[in-house]
Picture 1 (cartoon, rainbow, N blue to C red):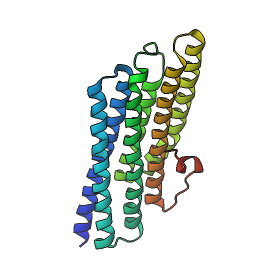
Picture 2: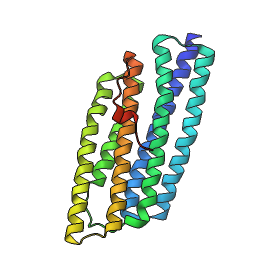
Picture 3: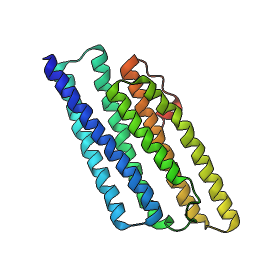
Picture 4: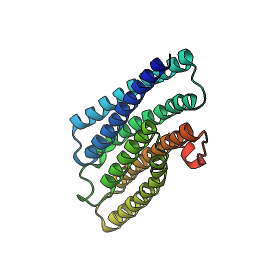
Length: 222
């Protein structure tokens, strides 16, 4: 029975890593959409989001089977319960990548090339998502807490994007509507970072049994 449970848990880990990879792909493609507004890229983001939705359902079913058939206790129960919470945040990450891609037709080419830190935001949140999932699979509390700390970098980048947009408006380098759309894209990246922090906090719970989430990260805007 224990061998069967271990095998099922390992499969869940593999599927979580795959789902995390889909999230990373969706974020990266969405960032490219902001610069190029390629319809094919937008469709790729949409397809990645659909795969993320399917992965959420599959992993949720796996977790429920583990809970019902294996009746895990203590640390094992926390592990499965945390996974159910994590995939909900990962599903929202896919949605927000799609939201970013939908802004592409309105912002592509509107700001001078290289003038904004949106690419930096995208890379930062991709790293956070990757590390949060890795922390879960490896039971790495140090890495999970590093993800929580990394959110400060994303918040700083968001503030820099706001300042850059304000300067572009003052200089006449961008119109007001495009600047608002770009600010919304930056906000979506910031929210993705918050979801990665949520995932890391559930990793911490799965390892320690404590879930000391801040209200800011638990109340992620939808």
